[in-house]
Length: 126
Ligand code: I3P
Image (cartoon, rainbow, N blue to C red; front, side, top):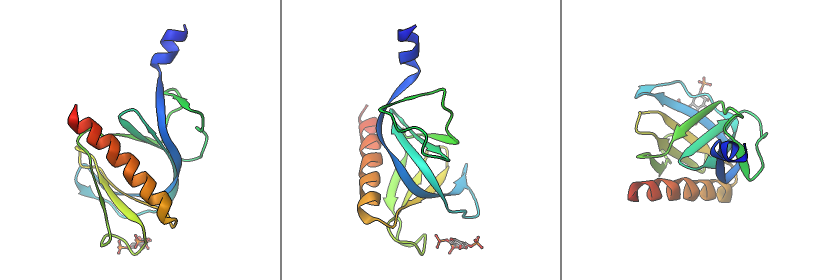
């Protein structure tokens, strides 16, 4: 039914392309491997897709992202010392998964930083 389907949908706050590397998994350091990723910020989650497939205002949870992280309790900060690249920010989940996210376009990086930080702050206040 429409209602059932609606429950499988997340409102998309922002989507777009960023360079991404995961640098830790559950607190264990990983080797950097930068790659382009399609990000979808929706609800309490940040989802990473390989390709920019999901561009609609709504994304069905059936279109499985490569990975998805819960933003509740996450931390975000600019990371000038963690990469030779510019406009890099560091993102850490409560479970100890850490990512660096980057765009050569400063405004793009700034917009993503603010959007993710906004969701984290909203969740902190709940
Ligand atoms: C890494 C690769 C990364 C680089 C990283 C290198 O080498 O060049 O792009 O990170 O630097 O170690 P490899 O491909 O051999 O793993 P940045 O681009 O973010 O600087 P790092 O070890 O100083 O973090």
